[in-house]
Image 1: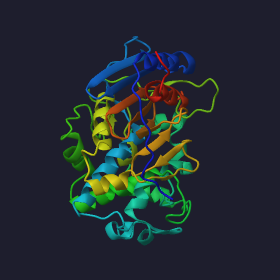
Image 2: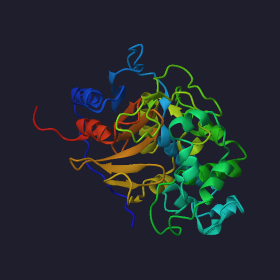
Image 3: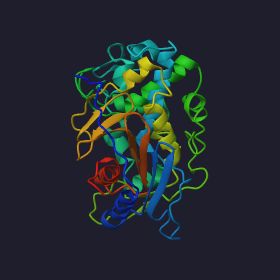
Length: 368
């Protein structure tokens, strides 16, 4: 079952509540640093707590670039939907139509999986990131050994297909990075250009997102950026913290490999939510949601974006992502006029931090 309407009045509150939530994120969860930008109409506010670099004590800054993880999926879905609006592909096209022979065997049939199912995670395709061997290379000392490895999209799909599907196409919801690797491969087939060229031409350049880009095989982040601190998925209650800033993100690519800033993400998500990037028909498709069993609580997933109900009952919309040393949330009102992007340059604080920050900004307050 899907729904088009998950709307609630989002009330702007002053930034001191957000600043307090940022301060708590550092003192209570041990985050090295956290940065946030609020945009409400033409008003803008930036706040931070903690540091960008624990050795130098350098503070967080508005122009810092960071890895945005799965918030990349909103960019990927936008490109796919723009192509659908231009008639260059259709959401009900099968994967087999565009990538013949790629999605076959071990319980898979690319002729039964649609582009729409890739984008809303109802395809049932196994996520390559959960493959036992692939995941083992991303933990502890193994990650340090493999951090500069290059992997192709085709290799990522083959890794996924070593594992049977979660369920048949359209029979459930399972968040899978493989879906968005396939979606970008279809973009390349439909356009004859690289996915990086298309996302730059269609989204980054028109919106003047000067701090946003999709790395090719670059291991370093361009320009000013915080140190990305990571436990490398350690299960130790007192884990060693590593500097994970430099890494080859070819293993994330269109599913989670982009770099951005808090300001750029607010501008992008505001434009996307506000209907300035997609035709009306594709906008409606993007914000048609499905239930998200076993994923983030109190959420529904659209095409590259999701809706989340805050503890106060207000719904916010946007995208989020987690990668080594960086967790990001870019959410706001359904019309895109009131936005909040938050980033933590550490990966162990948990999702409750973001819920606290969002609630401080978007939950109605009593008389003041």
